[in-house]
Image 1: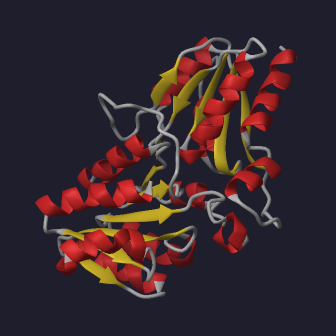
Image 2 (image 1 turned 180 degrees about the vertical axis):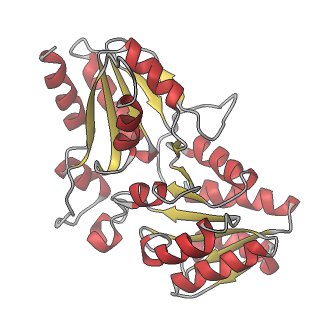
Image 3 (image 1 turned 30 degrees about the vertical axis):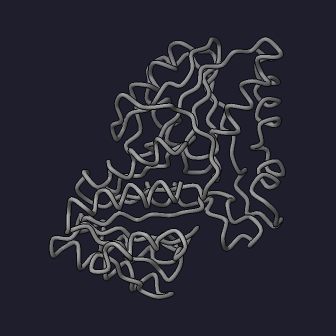
Length: 308
């Protein structure tokens, strides 16, 4: 996803000299094509994320469209006060980009596990939050936040994510995308965890369960209409996220369901069960440890449906 982000940003920067990219002293391998082509539109702020964000806010308030870029929690939690006070409060045109959402940097320990970012960023008034599920969504999301005035958060995977879509006829902030139709159960996911969802759906088919699949590249504003349709059509809605289940994507879905007069569907939230990981290992390994691998997703859903 990060390569797709950079390639897309290069195309945007060619057309708009107001675009500026600031890094917190990392990502040089992937960012090199950008800074070589646009040295006047690139700044390395050093390992000083608070300064990076304050600088971005100031540039944005002077007319720039600024992307800040770092890994895991560094462009969000480390400089949360600056995002809140300098960017969000002033509706500054700052696009905060995290590469490595969830357990991407799993082997580096909990300081690098970005598992609270969606809940925290979506709690900030006026901040738009996106978490694309594949390379195609990442491309469209990068373009969408450029066109969207105000502070945005873009949560990316790292690389190697499976392609969901061959192409998208339309992409809009705030709209979910139906990937596959099914019956009885709808699986809703956000971000790069969708590769596990695809595999889980294939496992479920083997036991006679054919779920509908939706990807939500936008977490805020959430697609209320799609949720309402699912609540009427299906017996079970399952939310999948590589994130704490408290305050994140599943919570956003439950907020909508809770205001419906007669929601038919039951809700199952699958994610990190309100804990920090004291385990280190690859992203794939940690997903399995914490119940968000394909086989464990499929097992949870099959067990719930047996009770209907």
